[in-house]
Length: 233
Ligand SMILES: [Zn+2]
Image 1 (cartoon, protein in one colour):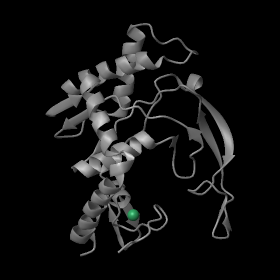
Image 2: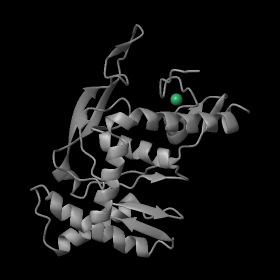
Image 3: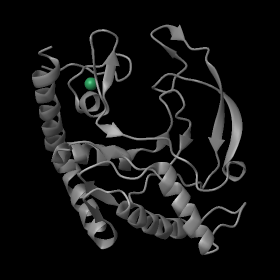
Image 4: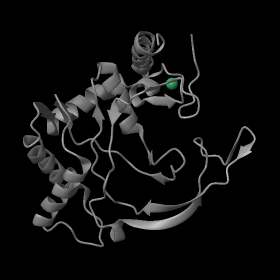
């Protein structure tokens, strides 16, 4: 049976989005997100990387009216200038293979950033490492601070000029490796050529011929999760 899911408006409680990213529906139930993210910080200083804009806050689909209701929300918002980097760690708890690929696919396909009413700017995600660990690893803040320190050491910060992508990549890889050693978790880090292979393999799985089968698997898993943990309540 198919339940349409209008995420954040009417959660279906059984699709991969609902199960992996979580939901809360008043008294009728909630599910904690298995995808953990925290605030991201720009490497470069606020005054070199942001400007403030005033704008309308549209609905999820980008329109200003929906089902006859017109939004009048107005926002003042920080606007990020081009070529600003935000080191971010996305943690997936207790992943299955399909769950991991589902979230990886979402990360790679994300082209806008912000809460559902503020997706106004284009962005691009780049995966620099995959860490398999038996506990939570370092924070965005520490990763950003250490990356900043390493860039500074090599004299690669030249405000107000933007940072070079290759410099950031190298500094972040080094920063992450250093920080992981102090995290007190057992871990395996996949980066460089090994990461390229993993991403290429994921790309094959996510290619058009097989994505249907893979999405069905992700849906079967999330539906089974619903039947086991949510539908029975
Ligand atoms: Zn759903």
